[in-house]
Structure formats: C-alpha cells, structure tokens
Image (cartoon, rainbow, N blue to C red; front, side, top):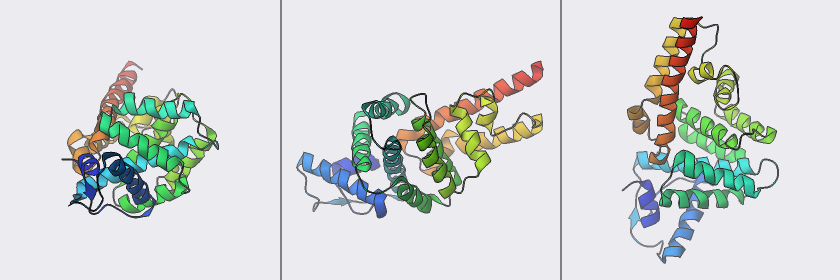
Length: 250
C-alpha cells in the first residue's frame, strides 16, 4: 500500500509539521468525515520514502493553488487549467485526482503565502537538488499549461528559485523549455549553442543519469509524478538527437 492508500484508508501516525502538514491534516480530516472514520483508530506510519512522496504531492498542489491566486483571484479558467493538468498531463487515477483537488482547494483558501510552502519544501529537501529542480520545473509547467506565463506567476516561481538556491541561468533554461524559444532543445539539455559537441554530450549524459526512471523512483518522487519524470527523460533523448542532427547538417 502506497502513501495515498494509507492516507485515505486510515489515520496517520506521523507525517510532517508546518503549513504542508496543516494542509494535509485538513484534507485527511475531511476524508475521515466523509467515510465516517475516527482519527482515534489504528495509526498507519509512513515509511521515509512514502513521507517524501506525500510531501512532494501536497507541496506541488499547495503551491499550484497559490500560483492560481497570483493575480489576486482564482478564476474558473485557472481551476480548469489545473484540473486539465491533473487529468491529461499527470493522468492521476481517481483517488489521487480527488486528493489533489482537495489539497488545491484547501491551500488556495489558506492564509499561508506561497513563500512559506516553498521554504518548508526547501528545508525538507535541501540535500536533494534534483527534487528541488523537479518541483520548480513542475511549477513552471503548471503555470504555463494555459499557454501563458502571467508576470505574477513568474514572480512567485522566481522567488521559489531563490529559496531553492537555484541560480538564474538554471532557472532560465528550465523556463525556456516551456516558453516558445528557438533554442528549446538546447534549454532541455541545459546547454548553449556555443558549447562544443563534447560539452553537450557530457551534459546530456549527466541528465540521462539524473532522470533515469530507476533513479527517479529510488529518490522518492511520488508514483503519481513518475510519468512526468519519464516524459522528461524522453525529452532529453529527443533534444540531444535534434541538436546533434542540426549540428551535423550545419
């Protein structure tokens, strides 16, 4: 049984404190009320990996909710965009989708600002740069899913990049993957057109190692997000092939 099954199937003996824990507790409390279950029953304890998966999941949709309020209000179109992202990009099953929507709705009405969620996420994953990158890229993807990148959304995500200690160049490369740009394939590889073939190959191999499906699973990325990571793995291969083909033809 994964973390989600434990969350909806019984009370949790230990999770995490702070705003992320508060959102999770509120959502799970509502789930218990709906199912008529008592929080005083048998407590199921998360393993370290399940805890990481749950934190990533709750953080992602909590920060997505704050992004949706970046312009001061949440419109039906913004909610539809997130719902579309959940259905078509992540392709969550019904239980995971219901959990994501509950987290989104609770977080968007909470008084905690975006930065507080970002700061707690950093404190929990400060030793894992790849998890921080994965979260930042996911936020960019959610923010641009409707075909636009609102200045207030970008302002929030740039603050997350600062909190995560992700430098400006790395942020710009991540953004370039989702914003129309002639250098998209170089951006996917974290490379520049001025790089030599050997430099590009080195960066490609490093990314392949970081995003290899086995390594992603071992790092504790939630099962619900592995499809997103696997797609990134495929994009890396495609980008390398496109860049090298372009260079050979030049």
